Length: 321
Image (cartoon, rainbow, N blue to C red):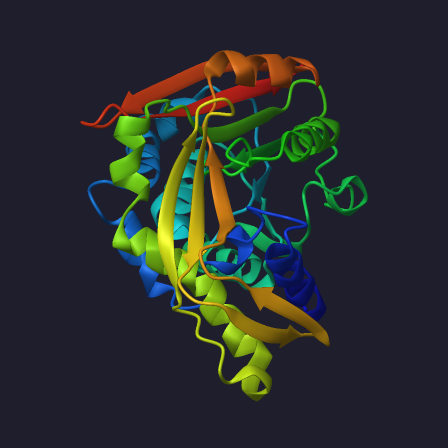
């Protein structure tokens, strides 16, 4: 990830031009925080999807036509790749002659890590890594696809529909649909929770706070000695449920004012101002169905589960028609 891209993202955050766009930075510093978070009892998206994959991966795989190429969008860091991607690929390999796996991520480290894990785990699969923005039509069209109608796209973790930006979701779904030929499939996870009371214990935790602070620690690390007085911990967490957009908003409130220089631009962090670091949008099956239908994607199977608090997660198999 280039410094200029990082710099512009934080300049936009502190100037108020953009918000909820820093999710790409929360894993780059102190990766153990994410590992600790996903292993807590309250962080349901990870545990529920792992449960769904364990219970239904083989059924999903066995009811597909021949799959020779698996394209995974957004495999993410090491922990979810081992816990979710590997079992899903294992189920697919047990039912199909899988020849290729492509790990596609905006983060080069994530894409390469997933490629390496799959390459070591599955001797008969040629694993590749591609660093792409899958909301970019031109970039995603460069993925090498099998010509025999045997491609399968998977996207675990609720990556697509949890984005707060409607335009982004539409672009990604359209790009996925354009990649697939008629009769090919797309399998993905979706967070379908809708209760603030149930969501709060999952997201308003010290580990979630530390994960948000990772973005600030990453900024300080990138700035180096030029802003040695910048305190990345001078923020406190704020949880907000936006009922209208069914979105969890995770924010940091500045506990004191600070001035920093980012790529020759002076930025003012103002005490008590809220900075929206990332959002997690929740959706419904009906909303997903309507959005997919615009791009000729039809839901074939839905697998749902929920936790003790009432939070819900689904694994969906869809077909290009």
